[in-house]
Length: 441
Image: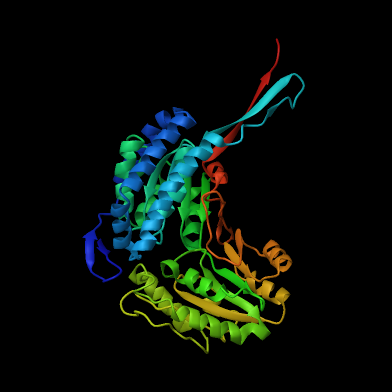
């Protein structure tokens, strides 16, 4: 299959998707490497993962070029995401060493009990095309730090940086500890069906449901689509509009946690439309953000836009040819509009209004996705109350997409389950074993 440069539409290479024999061989390689990797102490694994992070940082320019070739990201975005990926390997390795000691005590008379946290075995990590290296690091870093070996299947349109990561992992971690398996959706299905012990999947809700159905009794960690509500109250701070415009166009809006649905109060509705239209006009496709990733995603974006009943649809200046799409706002649309209830995954904001904050909260919680959300107000008490009642795994106040390796990220509802980032992510790739010893003769 051809690999396409989303910036130009030109063929930039080819990919031979892995099939059953290569999938089975990759899993067997990871299985063979698992005992030695598991036997390392957390300190020894930390040193090797630090060496991998060193290699990623030493080759930032090369990784960023590969990321840009597959995604079309601006150089600043690609460079920053590569550095974040290196940081994630360092963080996860240190978190595994600093994890809270297993609980121990005498819970039964004459017996001592404790809990061992053990790696699951061979983890299959299937990651998407919107953040090829960064999503690989989100999944692989905690899995490796917890003592698992990993078979990584990158998205079919963006295998480039994963292939380089595999080369560096072989140097830093040892052969077979991190195996990369380029391919298409059939490759992913074959990997899920093979003898892996855990499946970590990041992608669409539909594909996530299929993975869960095929997984059977095996552990599954799912980070699926989002459709983030943004509650903007009349006393929102002045930077609200520019911050939302920047967040919704970062990576061309192709972020599961990107702001998607702006919901404000009736008296603030026209003001919100005016301010957002002006702020989005400052964010130009081809200058400030890249294209959509592939023809299928562009067709889906265009379909949702065409199906929308929005009466106002101002688009910002910027490229609109090929896979490029300008920043756009949709207003005067029904609450069940396709652009509201489905994840658009592009540089687009819908604007809705409600008579009260309670009604706005109901709109925010009125879709199946529940990944991320934000509240914008200068009233801290109101902000804390609304964030507590938002159905979302991650919520922000007067900011959006502010994330760090130390803070957990995960969804609810059709946005999946499980935890990425933070020390809590280690438990996605471990299982507890209770050991009880009788004391005395």
